Length: 125
Image 1 (tube, rainbow, N blue to C red):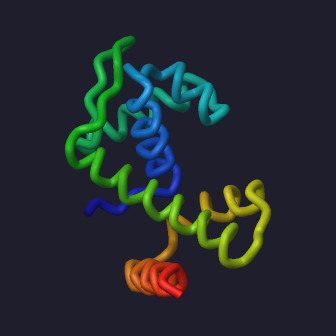
Image 2: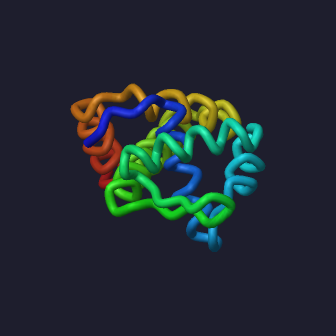
């Protein structure tokens, strides 16, 4: 898997979520992330150059298979970490969302594996 900056991972995750609602445009991403359209355009161009999305100028943005795979992984880490923080540690949803958004980019595969095993074990009890 390509090593991306946290910012580019956030773009992939956002595009992935927005794709579930319909066609995605630069404006949609800018609105969702609270960023300027020029910033989003630059990031989308980088993602397209890396083969992670397809984008025609002024057209829709679609994740490639690889982009979708990476976005799904980031979203899975986000949801898993957020759920753990809320359900196991009693963290407020707002703080858990903020922390999960940061943690999803740096957590190791080993830690995620152990976290998932812990969650499954605690659910079985």
